[in-house]
Image (cartoon, rainbow, N blue to C red):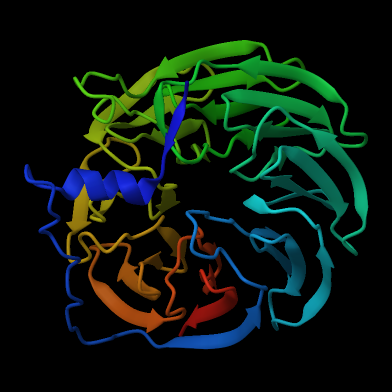
Length: 377
């Protein structure tokens, strides 16, 4: 029977010594001279936010709106330029997936295994479809097909107009996995998705048939914990190159058409990747922030001053790359060398949700429910 391992528990176990006592503390914040002014443009409360359970609840941006949902099913549309609420609804279902958005529709997966489609203009419900298991990552769509991954290892394609299932692929789930699933990429022709087995697959978007598959990580340890090789991070598509990271595995660059490997580096990460300045950014399992050359895989720089601070996914905006930690600090670094240029605390309960960046504005959704827009001056 499959068992799910929360990421926080996994990190706790990894930090334990032989006598099962945790000795390593999160790094203290270093002082530095801020060279960039970070202005809070607005803040909006989204219910109870991610709460105390390990949920990420990614937001979605479409046009001038940003959409966010809390764990209790409160879904809100907010003007991302001024922070004013456009509408809010109650789904009356517990949610862990966050929000997916495409061509005027929103998609939310619930903990009891339902996929809900709504109108982005007013939040009215369009349809609901029962799935086989809970949904922990945002459904993604190309406008015609919406694709969702479930915790039991299935990936399903549905018609966006009716919710009718078009196809389904099932991948074996290891005995022990991290809590969460990778967010798929959906294009006009293909679906790119990572799985708990350490494999990434390209599927035909029309019928779900496998176009190619590539192993990113191989389970080699003796214990079940050592053999966890989940791909929890969303694949990152940049032009014709697909980048993917895995836990206790590798960071790889693949040809999107064939799956052929271009380069690979040994890395362990469960957070989404980011791209900018011809570099790929990641945070590893120890919260070290790294930048790799996107073309060669050469390590450009790393910043280890946030070690063990439960740093989340990096996000680029403007000339900067930002990460947020368990105390709610947003750390902003130069993309060129990884040096700190600014720091801002946004939520005392911490930040787990992946941030969003548009031009010079960074959108941060804190665990307590505060959605904040920051601008680097």
